[in-house]
Length: 461
Ligand code: PNW
Image (cartoon, rainbow, N blue to C red):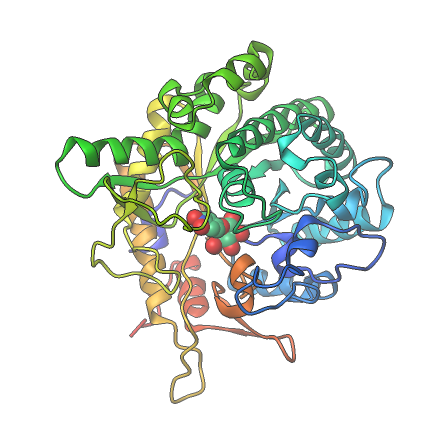
């Protein structure tokens, strides 16, 4: 596999998120986010850490931009922290916050790297959560206001925009299982949060179109390849449910303008959606986008017939608690996520079937592995290189089979603060020593740099 096996216009980049790398959570007028509050809940974060410093990227962004330039990437997907722009979730923009992202986007462009900005990668201002967060429709309006300010302030520097990152995680990990901030467990009402997030997407899309006529705007969903464990009709139903909750509940409204009736029924939310998800809402949510971003990591294999314990923790799949996630025995990464590159083609095909000409981008793909230092003192992450190569091959297969895949972003440029896992999971091409903040490219980074130059890749053995 070489770069020249991909179309010349194919975009290769890396991705990060503000909260996972910036640190400086109390500087330059930044307000409190739901993740700042969540990290203080005992037991919420596996290693008890906070992201107050993280990769100190807020101060070291220039070094990080130089790093990606040296590696040879075309593009960089980052996110903008809403509480840096609107510390209280409303009102006039905070100049210092805007200036930071102007310096970042400008620095990228100076190095010939195309900035791709995500408006919302999970860091809701806590002030808005205090008023009900994404369970409240008003949060979608607040998001529109924020989107307008950001597009005003950055529209001359950024043309590629992503409204939301993975609304499934925000809604169902944030409000159903409580594994993510704000850590609430409201059961199937988490689907209301999903609707309000999608409505926020629709409003933000409209704001970006109005402010930056040349903008290319999309949104990013995390999609899973879902398969039944066995041939029974019960397992087929389990697969229908999990595909419904993870994929179709988001794909259908954005790409076809309606919610999947079977999924609303599984959730017991048919009535709420009939009353609150109006035709006008769905018109906004399904307004034409320029591309769909897909974050792909793994496959779910599911079976029916599980009886959860009475004191079982709240599920991320409300109404489908009887579904069991089965281990297939296939290799997994350190997250326990099965490695299944062909599933990337499956999810792209699923999206493409709903919107045949819509360009698709893999906006995240990557793997967590523990550090291994080889005899020469280099960080030997051969398993990561193998994972990336297999998924780049899947990208090539997708294109060869006619899917309109325009690019691929690796999660992540540097090791960073992995949400509920804290610093205990490393996804970077570049190692970060959290005591010194020193950045050291891993062998996967060297492999990627060769790939990007279309050189014969360094051995990954
Ligand atoms: C994505 N899950 O998160 C995010 O966009 C990144 O910020 C994150 O670091 C990356 O993937 C790696 O985890 C997910 O539990 C987090 O299903 C959790 C899940 C899925 C995606």
